[in-house]
Image (cartoon, rainbow, N blue to C red; front, side, top):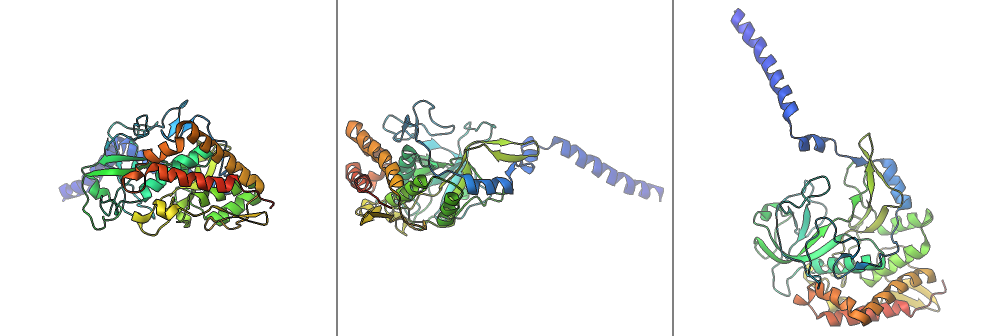
Length: 386
């Protein structure tokens, strides 16, 4: 009888001891995951009022290479040659817990030894050609994102970093956010899109709600004191690249530099909150079908600005007030003229189109450049009285 009571007493004590021992030996990464640092409601509210959509572009930024010659490539960036063509990468599946709201198949992976400042593996978002590698089936979002990112940064707008490269990932079928359509997944994915996020999304308590609709976000920023010229230039630029998929989830508030507080919250440093298009897949020729995006036939002939009796309006979708000020036109026109001058001196615009590899499934880079120049001239030559 006493022996049974003793056994009943010892077993629970042993279990308590064992659990305590396990808690002491839990990996540090598991403990850190429980203590994820997050932005607060106050930080989100401040970003909604103070985020910027434009800043003076880095004069040393090279849109062909995707980085500034002074600072060099960002941490984790694929290597590129002098023509801006990215080297192939070999990676291993590294799925995100949340698949996100996008509808096209993608996967996430990491390269062994490629880590961030905290020693964590850098996770790449990969967009493959999920309908097949035939010219008429390739995923145009890959090229639209690359072009929009490179030209946006050259003009002072914000964008995620994008590359086009051959990707090999033997186990990434298990990391797909959705199944391929009309084609089989293979470990080797030529000319895939590779993305690294611009900064840290500003959400509340890490709830992943860091997005904001274009019309209401721009109106709020303008009312809070954002320079109208910068807001108008942003709208004009969205019309220039023909940004068509303007649902709320594709635009976000992000922080470029932040600090972690003692209470495990994050504070975005002053002037480092930005509002930008985080999904630029439906650009340079908007279409509902992925294979028809970023085609010259879809982009050609669409003018970003309309002028009537001196009054200028933009053709950008879903941006609310379409009226464009002369100051806003001039701001974008100055940047575009700088690109046109660089095209004359060293074929900069053409080299960006070549680096995108879009000519592998669409028109030659020179044909794209001609339309880029034509569109730029509609803004440079316009005059707005409003």
